[in-house]
Image 1 (cartoon, each protein chain N blue to C red):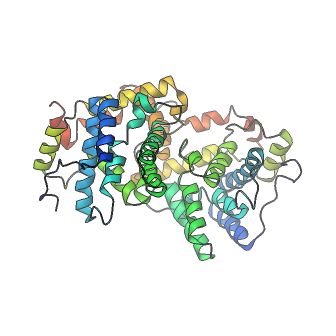
Image 2: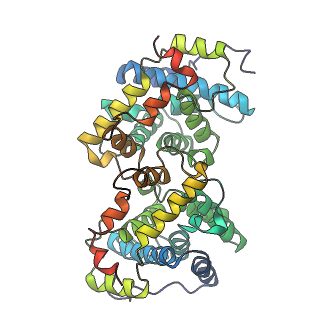
Image 3: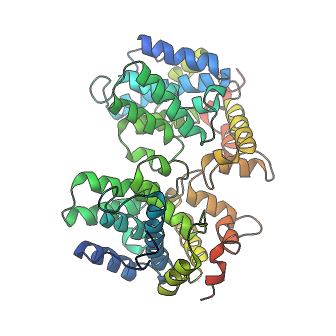
Length: 219
Length: 219
């Protein structure tokens, strides 16, 4: 049950520490904190779905997928492909170097590559579903089952820091510098279109002020 | 070499005939013709890439993926998921009923589900790449290697019939009737946003008048 264990315990394996230090050192604090919160929310979602770590899913792989899901927005993974795919490639290379076998590496690749693909990720297995679900929960989507106590502890440990704006800023800046990163009708393309049209903010940012997490955004 | 065989030969197996009759009977002529042209262009793309039918890819699976890629826009596959996924589910069920094994069924599912996911489909194997590539060629993308003779024969056999407008009409109508079919920042969501904002046409439609195929659109 999610209420038994504190909601901010992170895996402590060598791989998990490497994953965490990669985003803490490579990403802005707003995006790094969002990435860790996404994992914590994904764990609560797994509990909610009755899915068991070590049985239904691998906690370390879920940690890697969630915590690295936006690594494509960092300078260390800023190639010409869309950020979801650059991030997936970066994560896959990191895991492979640490000895993770090809099949789970492929699952993490897919979970990161599809994390902005609503309606598709949910159909690609539990790791994909939990990764997109955890990210979505941090954007306030379908967060009704999260208790206020859980939300408070998570946001106190990993403050929001105007995450939505930081994230959209980076996605749009990448897309404007490198158009190949924003294929037509992709996530980056949609955000860039919204930023380029009145009222010049994305729905993602406007929605942030209306979610349950709005009260935490000032902290 | 693509110039050796006429570019409008379709596979003639029982499965291919069933696939073809499904779209001819179930979709508007504009979308059915687009679907068949997507296969023919995908074959030419395969030749261009040096990929061999029967060796690098299965011709029947490529036919199924291309010809059924928009079946989610037909009344027979109009469930609440995004049309790419409804179409993938429909195609997978059809192939499984015809005795196609689970693994190739899964490949066709993915090729259809990801056909609007630019930058991701290209990374998911040859069938995904050829399916999205064939569809893209029919929208005029990167069509430089197609000869005028090939384009003429293909368009004479399967006229364009204002395909772009017919397709966007259907995607947007579905999204407006059933919002779950247009997750935020999906293809359907982007088209719906464009249709809802001046000049009230999508980039997909406006681009159509500027592609090599514009001259065929009147036929």
